[in-house]
Image (cartoon, rainbow, N blue to C red; front, side, top):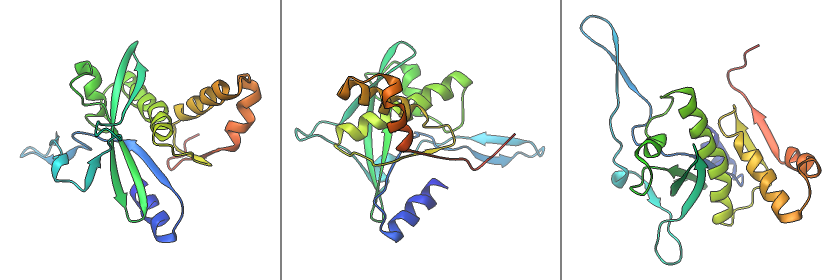
Length: 188
């Protein structure tokens, strides 16, 4: 669905930037075994042969964002993908300078415990806003798909508080005015 959203924005010439996590193994490949039971397989993606590139600073070093997760600093590198005329930035925690458990945060989509999912959402939300700031991209609006990137609004509020010295309650309305929320699986 996110890919369709980016493709449509490109086709319409809308100024949109996508942010996501770069999963080493992506989503599960499912098949039925001889007994008729579903089995899951994960295969590593070969990023070197995919149409994307590591984002580098003016010194040729990978752009790196730091986010505190589980009381540890997680370093995230950034990859860039062109989707027509739209940019998609993907965050990757699989770095040798991260704790092995943190490296797996960008291992698989929809896997792991609730704690892992929250950690991934922190990387996406907080790390995504920090990455946009580091790349000097200032979105007018933040689109939150489901709750996956909801932590981004807390980071937007934190940055606004740091810049203005105002309280959370003083920046709350400004942050709300920059947020759009959609859901594709509504439940009561």
